[in-house]
Image 1 (cartoon, one colour):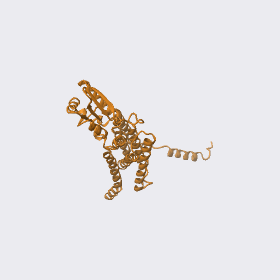
Image 2 (image 1 turned 90 degrees about the vertical axis):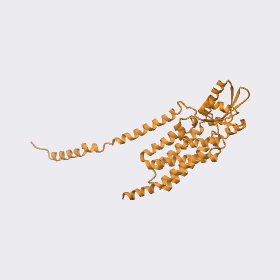
Image 3 (image 1 turned 30 degrees about the horizontal axis):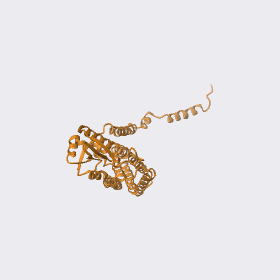
Amino acid sequence: METPIGTASVREPTLSAAAEVSPKPHDAARHRPPVRAWLQPTLIALVVVSAFIACYVGLQRDPQPHQVPIAVTGPDLPGDIHQALGDNLEVHPVTDAEAARHALERHDVVAALSTDGPGRLRLEIAGAVGTSTTSAVNNLVDAYAHGAGKHVTTEDVVPLTHFDARGLAGFYMAFGVTLAGFVLGSNALGLTGVLNLRQRFWLLAGASVAIGTVAAIIAGPIMGAVPAPLVPLVLTLTLLAAAAAFTTKLLGTYLGPIGVPVATLVLLTVGNATSGAIIGADLLPAAARAISALLPPGAAVRTITDLSYFNGAHAAGPLITLALWTAIAAVLLGLRPRLMRRRTAAAA
């Protein structure tokens, strides 16, 4: 019986090739993704969605007024209001109705209450501060008047513009600009190998100016929903975009992969939810009330409202807050290369 020539030689390379192709058990284990690769993105996503829903849904479940500022005229009425309504209102006694109106128009208070004849009260409100706050004041004063057997006449002396009937234009503007700044900072994180530090700073600063300008023009002159003067509004939104961009870049640079999710929580979730635009700051829980004006979205919402309806009477403080966020983040980013060089030298 003849054996075919070359059969053994053909079979041997074939078997060896199959052995090379088949992965060894220890090679498969070596290339298996680590558990962290599965868990970290999932946990981050769960934290973000939990925080988002807890903030936006939780804060509006049962808002309670706390020290809402109201100007009250007359010798006895301020004391009566304070005794009846307690810490719900922060009573500012004033000499007469004109002084109360002046305090209201300067945004020192959100409402003004005065006597309007025997058994009658006159309540002047600033609808521009938001429907949640004015509704709370209306309800409290109505409750007092009902118990005292008096009739209340209400007038909105600082109404919202016709194109912002629900008073949410400032919130949407602040949210959009914060989101744009966040996206800008996130993209800048991937440009480290393309642009040097100075070029990245110029990118963040220049794009922030563009974001603020476009947002102000669209919401202001084009849509008429934000009646603030254009130049101060552009400055406010530019600072907000820069604060969001530099803060996002800072957190991503120092914290690594979790930096961007942390920026999402601080700026887009907690910052916007506690800004005081949807639920008035005086109706927020104590913890949210404490941080509301300190985060960029809350500072921006306050500035937009003051510029739009109160001649910028209290805009300086929030603008300083936005500038500080931008400046501190920029300084810390600028120090990063020096810190890394020192760490490398110490390790060597």
